[in-house]
Amino acid sequence: MKINEMTNCLEFNPDIFYANYPTKVILRPGYPARAQFKSTLMWDLYSNQIMNYLDNNCEHYADIGGCFGFGANSMAYQIFRSQGRYPKTKVFEIHEDYINIGKQLFPYIDFIKGDFRHYYEDPKQFDLISMFDIIEHISNPETFLYKVAKRTKLLLVKTPLETNGDWFGGKPPNIQGYEHSDGHINFFTPSKYIQLLNKSGFEIISGKCIKSIIPPNAHNILNPETELKTQTFFTKGMRLFVNYAPFYFTRKLLGGGDHICLAKSIYL
Image 1 (tube, rainbow, N blue to C red):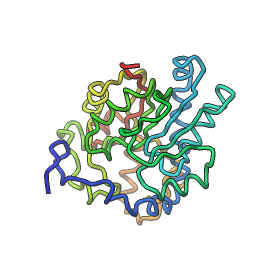
Image 2: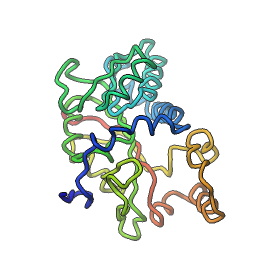
Image 3: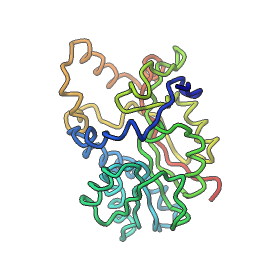
Image 4: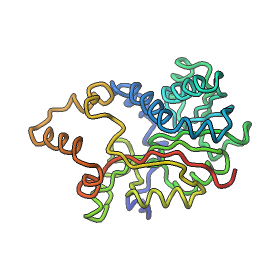
């Protein structure tokens, strides 16, 4: 197999990896709550800037890689609360299982099967697109983001930063691609991630690196999967340290975290 020059991992075929992924995802007890929480958190942080930029008119909204639609439904509801009407909402997914379940859960959402890069139907331009935990899965993220920048005014995006401590080179993990539990193939330091957005045609309006979207005392609700594992005294101690130490320090020493931001296209 070929070596992916960007990630230094075996070439990854997402269609193969994610063939049975929907079942694994929906069985994670915290998944629906996390998806909805991410959308609500991002809206709370950036809603004023979004609605001011769009003159309080978000007509077309899409969530790329939106799985079953939990996050998209939550975001559409927040937009409704702000402007008094729902946006025309689409979810782009590559697997039929997600779409079949999503259509039953949220019949008002238009689920589109296929790669967003190959979508040429109406609308030609979206007011807002969200992508939560997507860029780390895509084999050519710069090209993908460029295609998104050509089709949307605004982008809400959250991406994990899975490289190790910046003081130690910001190296990607050894477990990647097929060996990674979620099939991640792209791993970023904060600076490299911002460079990627800029090169792809986005200008960050507002953004920051955070330790996690999950508050320290909400793991049993938003990420109960981790609570199912036996935790050693050392593991518990490390969690306390990461939760309460300044993020600047933990990022430099241990790495990790997430980058969240609102960005605007330079093309629209």
